[in-house]
Every structure is written in C-alpha cells, then in structure tokens.
Length: 263
DNA sequence: TAGTTCACCTGAAAGC
DNA sequence: TGCTTTCAGGTGAACT
Image (cartoon, rainbow, N blue to C red):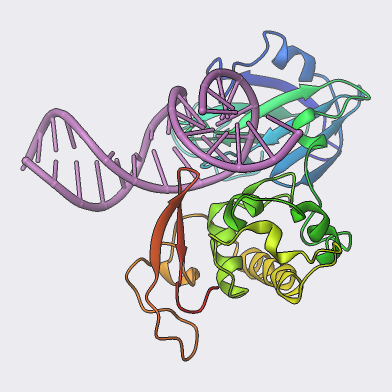
C-alpha cells in the first residue's frame, strides 16, 4: 500500500470488533498512503491527510493482495481475479489496479481512522517493543517492580511489553525456566535492580519471537512449532527434564508449563 | 489504583 | 450421520 493512492474502499459489513464510522470509507478514498509501519500488533498506515489508518488482525485476520496482472479466472466478476470470499470484510482498490483485501473469520480484528496529530490511546499505552534496543532487563524491572500479579498476566499486559500473546508468553516463560504463576514483582530486587532471572527472561522473549518470525508462525498449525503450548500431558522437551506439561487457566486463558523445570 | 472477569465471534473439535 | 456444546484467542469495558 505504501506509495499507493486509495481509489475505493468497500466495507462488506458494518462492523468488525466495533462498528465502522459512517464516513470511514469516504475519508480514505482519494488519499495516498505515505508509509506503513508496525507497532506491537497494530499496523499503521500514514495517509496524505495526516490521518493514520490503524489496523489490527485480531485472532484470525489476514490481508491478501491481488494484482492487476494476475492470471484471469473464467467466470469471476471481481477484476478477473479470485472472487471475494465469505469473510472478506474490507477491500481497498488502489490506483495501480491492485486490490488489498482484509479477511477475518472471527472478526476480532479492528480498523480505525486516527486524526492528524492524535495518537490512538490503544497505541500510546503500549510498552516497549521486545525486539528493540529500548527493551532490556532494567526497563522490564521498572514495569514489574511491585507487581503482585502473576508473571503470565504481567507479560500478557501490552503496557508492560508490547506484542506478546498468550502462546508466546507460555513459550518465553518455558525458555526462561520461570513459572507462570510466580509473582511478577519477585524478579526485581528491593533496590529496583533486575534479578538474574529477569535478564534470562528478556533473552528468552527475544529468542522466542525471533524464532517465530523466522517460521512465520501462526497461532495454529504444526504441533512441533511450540515447546509447551498445547502440549498438556506430554513430556517436557527440555533436555534431561523428567517433567510433564501441565495446563492451567489464568485470566481466562490457557497456560501451559512444566512444573518441574519452571520455578 | 491494581487486578480480575467477562463479552465479543466463529470454525474446529468433541460429545451425544 | 447430524446436531449441539465447548473451546480458543486479543482487547477493552465492567467489576471487585
């Protein structure tokens, strides 16, 4: 979309997670996308008006791009390319002839237009990017100091660290050998300095995310992609650990961990 | 103020 | 075989 002019926007239903404003499509049409960025799980498209198009894939959302030189499909009435599918909720027709389509079966996705000079509250509240230089053990110690909630809940909080979901919190805690039920504040010394286990956790978060990006992982798929997630009853995969993976519920979400090697 | 619970949604899987 | 129920997730509002 970057560098493209948006010719036409079609909303194929009135809402995703929230209703679209009545002027959502018309405000987008005619605008040029200056650049597209990512912040945590949000995609941000900077527009020629100074507004920002905020997009979130939710659980099941995805984009696909159809290009004008794509092979024609007989009988199809949509630009001679693939027909629109049941859960194609938003289409962006671009001046180049390309079409960007947002598909989201579960409709947990989100789109909003943010006015010039305004930062969406959901974005401004986000914590540091876990793969950025700004994120280290001292920063995480500052966020966890005094927290009486569990490590699982704390790491799932996007204000503590941005972009970790349920699965990768489980994976990072397993990689760091830390129990998801441990009180978050116990990883911080009385003087506010991070304990050694917090440094290990920061490295584990980075390692788990980088590996996931390399695999272009999605939340469902090959079972061998995860070390603990969805492995209840299986042997722990850590070398030499005799433990069995346990499932518990925290904050209404499944947590998977090894009670033997995660302390 | 901090922490917890619930609703939203729908495809897949399990249960009957 | 077909119908019904349960479960999963990210986010924000409501609740404790």
